[in-house]
Length: 359
Image (cartoon, rainbow, N blue to C red; front, side):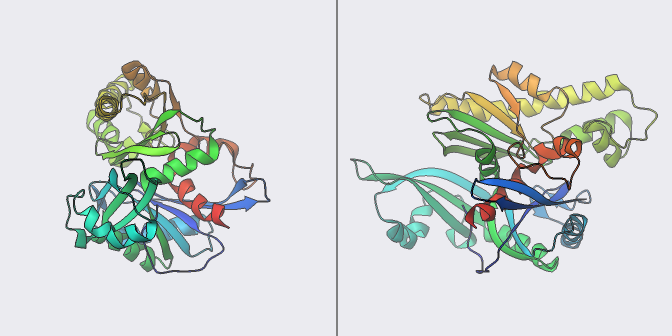
């Protein structure tokens, strides 16, 4: 699923995950005809607090600088970039429309979309994918995606000002799905939920028979862990963030494990509660497709006790997703470093795979 941008021919593409906490720049290379990929470049940089709030770019210059830093840290020379959007300014709906050809739908999509999106159709970029070409009742299933033009323009601006060329804008939930399909066996008839927990947004994508059938973004996300730890210990946001992800680099001598555990447990209950409500809604409206497994990704996916608490709450098997699990080993990076970071790379890997698969 790609929104239209100026065409640009390139042999490679960088998957750029512009998060509210960190920027991740990922580049892959296809190896031979076996369908294998290698992680060739990876750059990460921090984003100043409050630079991005609920998807709004409040400090574009700081975001631009963070993008430059991520690219420099990864020693990335490629200029072509794919990014991903999510949040309240993005609408994904599976709709039934009268059967028609793709060419006909191209011409009519703006008129059809007016019935399903809560925005002025003139203020959005639209894309679609035909899921089912038609049935006996003259209807077909279409996945409709709309994103506000202002949001797309924000991404294009910061990427361009960082000296890069934006060639595609995807949806974060679909980028994670692409990374999942490249690394996990997809069983016919299986229904799974991909839950990507970022700093400010959780992307939920329920896939049945290989097709997205329910997509939702919610705003109860990873930063809440950091904020609760920060309040509990009266420390900086940055120090609380390090403690949240396991204390790496933490220099605080006053950390009380019990207080940290209580803060994390409290937020975990809230986060799981919000996600469970979305899964329950899907279950109530799609009784024929019961969710069989949940895969967690995103920076907060490895928060202590989250996967177990999720299983205890829902009764579903829960696994932390590794979007590098089938990648060829790379001598460029330490294995422990990649294992620790991998769950946060779902969006970036999925974006980079778009072009790697096309070459």
